[in-house]
Length: 170
Image (cartoon, rainbow, N blue to C red; front, top):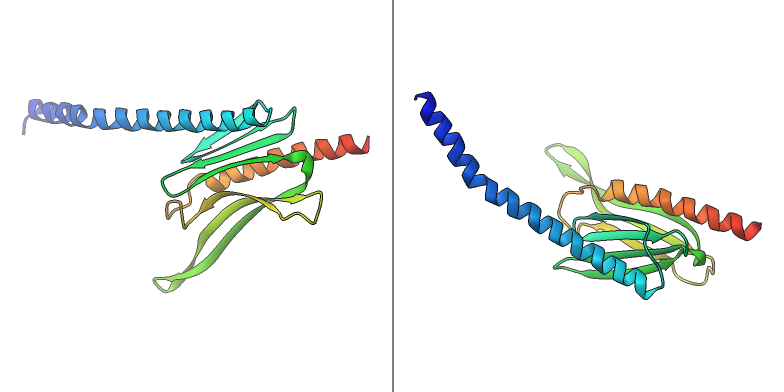
């Protein structure tokens, strides 16, 4: 095979693959824009303007640090979730990751079932508020960036809650 045939093969391969990459990226950006629009609309309905946001898969989360309002949306084929959490009504939050062991080729592997941030109300008679970042019943079988995003947001929320509790004491 001569060099000309190799170059021609590479060019044809690139010409064939490039449109798929372009459309995939365009669809991802359109989905992210739609999620951010929904998230900002949800926040605006609750008199909040989000200052920090994250988007992943079919989910988005954001916070208005001035009003301590947290907005969370999921928009997938399997479920739609729109939640607003007023952090002034929350005592604490924690990251909860549920998993189980599954036997695979003579060894046990840990399989993640769900990843959530759970809020405890100041009024303990109210049930906990749960933001579910991953659930294997609805999401892909493999855990992606959901755990990292949940860890990041747990820290952001804890910092915001600490500031609120400090203001109440002062």
